[in-house]
Image (cartoon, rainbow, N blue to C red):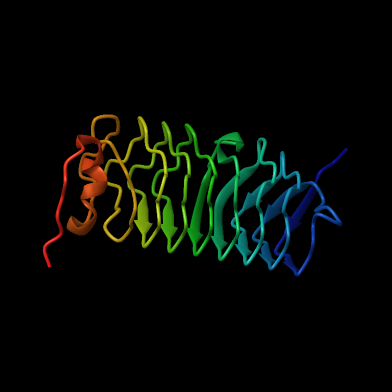
Amino acid sequence: MKEAYILDQNFENTDFGKSPLEKGEYENCTFLNCNFEYTNLSDFKFTDCEFIGCNLSMAKLSNTAFRDVIFKGCKMFGLQFSDCNEFGLSFKFDECSLNNSTFYKTTIKKTLFKNSKLIEVDFEECDLSNSVFTSCDLAGAVFVNANLEKADFRTSINYSIDPNTNKLKKAKFSLSEVHGLLYKLDIQIERNS
């Protein structure tokens, strides 16, 4: 069965849980205020697409291709990005909630996470080199054996990153949040007023 190829389409206010999105490849498409919660997006391909104000929570992403995709203002709880097709995997997140999502072992260099909630996100064994975390909340996010070289955390908060188990060469941090690198030493850091 031939898969659909959809180019330059706009989808607005659609509940794909009730009427599933046609399986195939979507290029330069915009999804505005759409619901993908618990949908199966396995084997779909999205290239140069934008998801704005969408709910993608718990969607199945087995072999899903995201290539140069922008997510803005999206609810994305519990997504398994580690199941995605790794070829050309690249995206940006702006004002998204990615709580409890997993990027385990993904290579997502130069990814922009902006004004997003990344509560308890799994970045274990991730290549996040040159990525930028702008004004993100990383409470409970897991960084183990991750490549964070040249990553920028200067405006983000609540991270706990062990310098002994992650690559941090030339990564950037703010002085006010440096305790997120020292938590494992079990020392007390006082903030001067």
